[in-house]
Amino acid sequence: MRLMVLPSGGSCANATGHKHAPGTNAPSIAIAVSLKRYPPIGSAILIRVQSGFDNGCIHMSLPPVMGLRQVLEEVYRKFNKQEFLCTDPLGLVLERPRTDIEASALVAALLAYGHVKQIRFSVSNALARMDGAAGSATGFADLCTAPRAVKPAKALSGFVHRFNTGDDIVLLMCLLGLSRRKYGSLGGHFATYARPDDRNTGQALSMMLRDWSSWACASALPRGRFFAHLLASPEHASCCKRWCMLLRWMCRRDRIDPGPWLAPEGPGAVKPSQLVIPLDTHVARISRSLGLTARKNADWTAALEVTRALGNIDPDDPVRFDFALARIGIVGDKKLEAGLGQHVAI
Image (cartoon, rainbow, N blue to C red; front, side, top):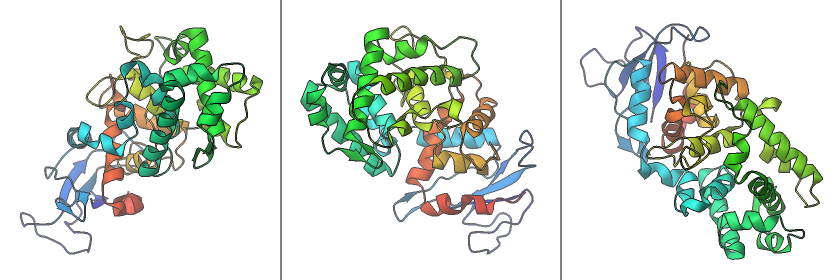
């Protein structure tokens, strides 16, 4: 996908700079996006998207003139489909039994950093090892709480995903097992801190992660240098992309997200309107281009800004656009990801 953002009223030019008269067969399509509610970005812009399919890249074809709402809805319509689950670790989670979704989703979400192929390989590898040791990821978590977690340690011996080791995953699953022992499930643990009047999940997530950090410090289990990377918290200004993604999976239900924490199946303590968008590299860059945030750092404040902006479009479910927006970067033209911000003119 080729995407250019120009001032409203700019001439119709393609990526090579050749102009096209109105009404001619131009290779780019102009989309008017009103950004008046986002002062850092300014007035209206035009996004030009080259349509078609070439070089293995998916290209979107959009009507000539659209507002921000229409752009987001069109992206959602085209990319929020199960056929794209093969580009996301959630696809592996949905292959698991319903009773194993919480545990396997925790593994999949917290290993979701790096290239998507590497992520999916590592998640599959970790889950297969857990199945071999305990029959399921849930059983593995319970096994990890044993006084001497020898079998889990052997099962994940030699496992590495970028900065994290098998020891990190064993300790992570031990923490899940402790939540299950004390609260019945990770969802039950989170629900003890969630409040119906909370504007978002930040406070509840921070408090739950405090518990896990405390339990990890008290544990005698070994861990790697970067174990704390798995427990990044909103109170430390992290955007918490992976935890926000886990919450999206657990607390929404549609053709993509399974929503096992929703009532009556789960504790039902979090509404979709309280979720915060998982701000990964792709979504952060595209959000800046669309004027959803002007912040350069993809931190917690930026995640809240993007979520509030999306809430102006859908206040009941602002993060429903997340999966679709991320697909633009994951299955689209890499030139879009590399240079999208360079084409923004204020």
